[in-house]
Length: 377
Image (cartoon, rainbow, N blue to C red; front, top):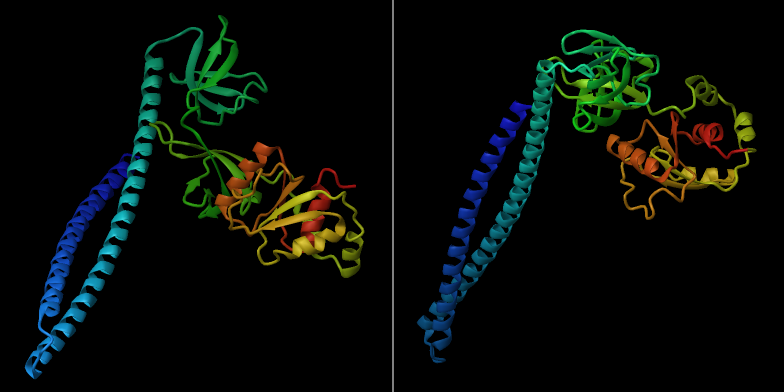
């Protein structure tokens, strides 16, 4: 983190220097433009004040002045365009500079929060308290104090706490050392991220739109290529940065076996699916750009009111959020990670059912909706 902040600071300084240099060049261009305009006005005034009686030599001089005047106008126009380009570049650099400063500020605040956590842990380690113990959660039923003393937790003790393995916490106990409650010391530090699980050289990584983080807890290979929600813990003295909890976002997705059977369905089986009757539910389908508007046309015959959106187009423009929809069907294989996070947050806020579809074909999506849409007959 310190290296990242230093790198950002260096980039800010570099862009600030470049910005100052371009501003100086812009001032020079403006000065030259003023000189040319003044010269053009003077030459034009001289030409206008000349007498109407010219001999051949004077006519040639006037023609030369006109040509020179035209060339000056062209040069002025070019300088104006160059100045406009400089102004646009300066505006872009100023915007980038502001963004970099914001990132550096965020990283600095994040590092300060981690430093405060480490200071708090050191303080707990020095001050022995009989009613509370600082340490790390090792497993669902084991808590390890800072002094490496294990404490066995009752079954289901952390079930609703939101704590993850290796997270620092404060364990409250009674006079006999029996655990009463547990509180996280990293509530403001840990981050929830959404992405796709990837496998590289025997390790699992949670890949987001902008970055990837190693998964530090055992997970099944069945998660590979699927959307998940992870909890990211930062690096501290006794822990490396990584994902320490992974939850599937496909709890409502059709099973691979069922999806496989639908993929092998013949035309008679598809006709049988067309007999499915829905109750006019309004469903938003996101992703599956290769099929796209076919969802709206085909699924309408099954009693569904379908609205389709591209898997790479924001849904922020949907008025009223998602509250008017019965469910949101997500085509997992054709969807940006950024949009996936956006959909999940919007659906949770509106209380709308999310259905993850492994297949993008019309029949596969229809089968997925048939199995998962809560009001389907």
